[in-house]
Length: 166
Image 1 (cartoon, helix red, strand yellow):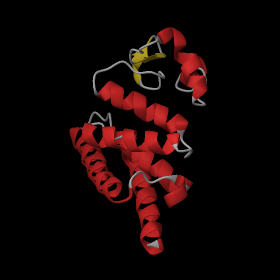
Image 2 (cartoon, one colour):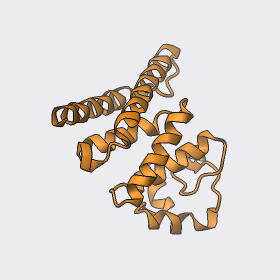
Image 3 (cartoon, helix red, strand yellow):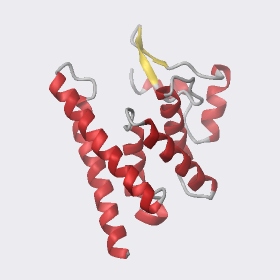
């Protein structure tokens, strides 16, 4: 089992590395690059589904911090696989409730899943676009409370967050 877990950790970190290398193609003008990105994220999403079925959520306690963050990244980018994203969100919520690290990542995944479902986000982590050179978030459920809610999960205030993109 230890060998399996070590191999799983390597597999997850390799998936995240491939994701980082190809993420620039997500919004490429070249259709072939966009397609390559979609295929990669779909393959990774499928594999994460298998991993979750076998191990549950790959927590830092199970696979190490880097691999756990990699699993989160794969779930975050499984935009066309809402079933995978919802399952990851459910398992990650259970893990965080049980004391696993990651409330910040959980908030990002929560917002990403809600946006993909066509719902308003909670924490204002997902950016819809840019207007007058300033990032504009997807609509939020309680826009007046966004910074308060962000603080509860360790995310900087919205204005500081978007300043990094400007």
